[in-house]
Image (cartoon, rainbow, N blue to C red; front, side, top):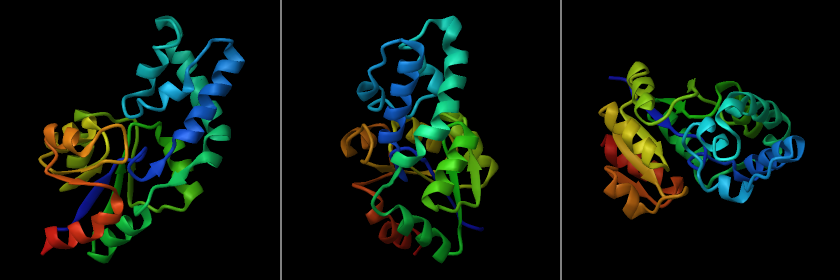
Length: 201
């Protein structure tokens, strides 16, 4: 059976907080609505609409989310940072003859722009997924491992009967990820190649 490993994007492969914060600051400036961007970037993972709803009335959420996505293209990419071990983790999957699938809650066209900006190449990209719906995407593409930083990522892996690998580079500690059902917890992706080699042995 061929190997496909799924990865979350924000705070798993990439530190997108600087760019997301900048985008919220622009949205705030344009709309005149105060947004605590420093708080917003501590809650990455769930769908964008969920965060927008903290700052705008319900009937404006869809419009503001679309505006945010437009601003994102210009303001978020320059602040994107590769997290330690991201390149090596993807290389390890390919060295084992596997495919890399990025399964993310981010708007897919913007996720593609972000990956291209940092030079990460994926075999599969699926956006606009969250928690159990990530499980649907993992099943569709035959992923048997899913790596993520959020409790929602663990739920997605469990929904797909995939090995849930938690990385403590996002809002949750290793203990919290393990308590949520992670099969494996790594401090960051620098430990992933050695874990994968052991997992496949």
